[in-house]
Length: 141
Image (tube, rainbow, N blue to C red; front, side, top):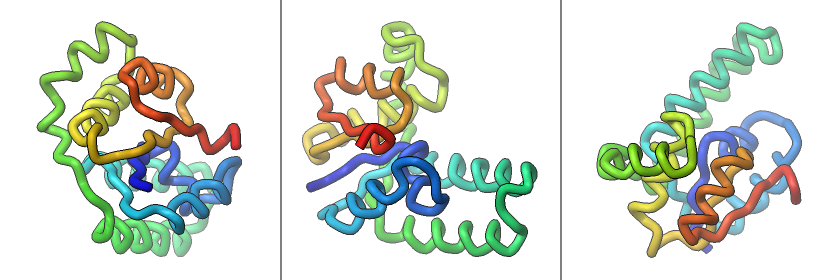
């Protein structure tokens, strides 16, 4: 199976939270993982927030950034600029946040290559489903 993971799902592979074990299993079984190029920056931002909130240590922060960077070499990265033209329509249609519209637009660029859109944001999942993508919310598994 080929999966598109948005940041809310992918980060669960690195941080222990609800849905983490499901995401790890899904990634282990996947034929291919697709992500927006934007996802790595969102992951780093999430880690930085966790560091500032003292939920991870400085050493964990450095280690997790290295893990994400390493793993990104093996993901199919979707150039988010390819889908930017669709973002305005996605925002108007589904009232998505900017980065969520970019994630969805990137997944739609590879719609014929992915089997499932994996995300933990209910609004984004609903929009993806409306766009005829198969969806999974790891938190509900």
